Image (tube, rainbow, N blue to C red; front, side, top):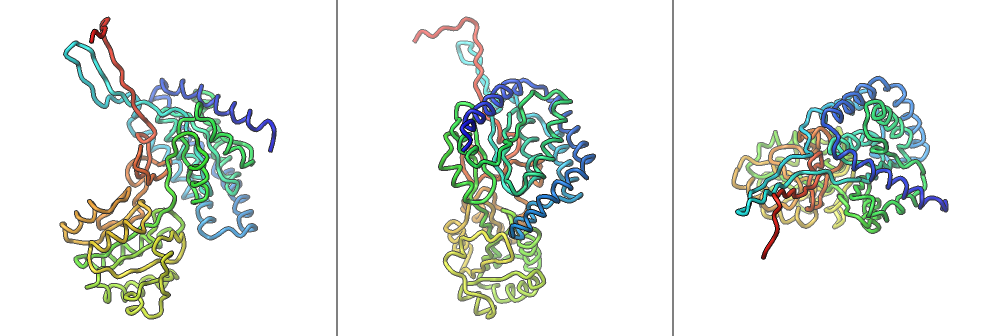
Length: 421
């Protein structure tokens, strides 16, 4: 370990804390100008960013990363255009800083206001997906927070190329210096050192594999906003439109398999299981999906593998899906609450009472009715972008956008008031 690493990390965090104080009073107009300028620069820097990404992809192929990891790592013109649009979308959103959340005038004339304010300094640790460099920076700065970015080594060149664009724009536009910083050393110990700095860093957000999240949760001395995995379910009820349900299951599983909101588990109501599973298996065949089922599913689809106990709680991030036939909506709910990861779960039904029962009893951050789990996304929810999807219950849950990176303070105004009792 570099003997100076601890001091370097302290200086990095201290600079971020000083910048956070300046960011709290930065105008919305200036923050929006930075976002719009950064979007333009991302588009103009496409060749440079894709060249950097090619270096990461080449290294990934040499190190035999999984297809899911390579997919998360890959950038192309369409994904870069999406990054730029995400920046513009964040610029178009209302600035949450300074919003009055409530207030009152007490009988003695004391005025009390509850006002939304930035959290302060965000330490964001992420793996594989270089596009979140821009998403995280956009949400943090727009909500008045300084951010320290630590990307994975597998995406270093790509993330650094995007960061350089954002930093150059920030300097040009007049964003406070050090509001946006990237950890430059590949030394993993730097993460541990930063996690000790609760006086300088207010919140840490790990976005990556379960091992990363568990390490951060164990070592952090400040609050952690997290989710461990995404074992997302689709339950097909007896009152579902079966053609519609097949389309949703196919989309939820195959539209992009290596992401946390892809469906990993399928539950099917017994009365419609035979007809539905036979049709669905044919629909899934071209995608190479391996189904692993319980005894009832295996009797309908004799060629599939038996699901193990581990399969019910597994996040595959690839072409595997567990299948269970359930007696009714209550068994589906119990199964999800037992084996799910509290991320995203969906019901397909035209019975409004069963839909309400499902949405009220499934203990997940996002519950869908007749829609793909893939919609659990900050952009799809109108948040512009997201810094992550939280499966915690405090302080934020689900896709985390601008308001999720704020807290509040009470501002009390008097006229020489003194307390006499």
